[in-house]
Image 1 (cartoon, one colour):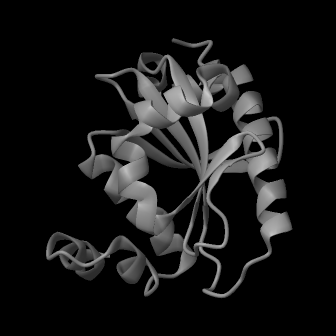
Image 2: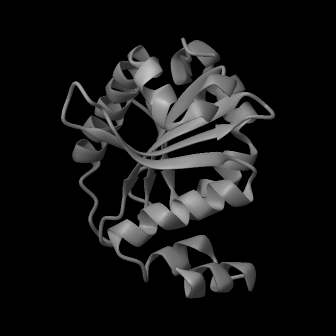
Length: 170
């Protein structure tokens, strides 16, 4: 990871850097990009009542917005678009369940109270699918910085009620 971050600072493209990482390091890489953008981040938050997790919860406490991310480090060329659509839909459902148990989340990630809403996003290594898909944003790593820096634009474009979940803990 230190080499990957140094390559990024030296001007390498995020997609190039991420292609040399395994799936665990890909999650760390996404986390680092969020932290560099001013987000407070918690990785691998598991739900107690069910058997799933959200890879990355990120909250910008200054602006009161958050992103819940599912990282997919699939090999280049893997383009099961229909599978990715299902994952996007499932990710939105998982976010709703997590926010329904926000008190449990608050114990592990106190910053969550400072976010008024969360946007679900699936961050991928490949460009097989992108955009707002079945309730979640699908964002190739090459476009991730743009997505984070222009999050307000994407929310406005697709409509808050369509692409964000209000945080009952805020």
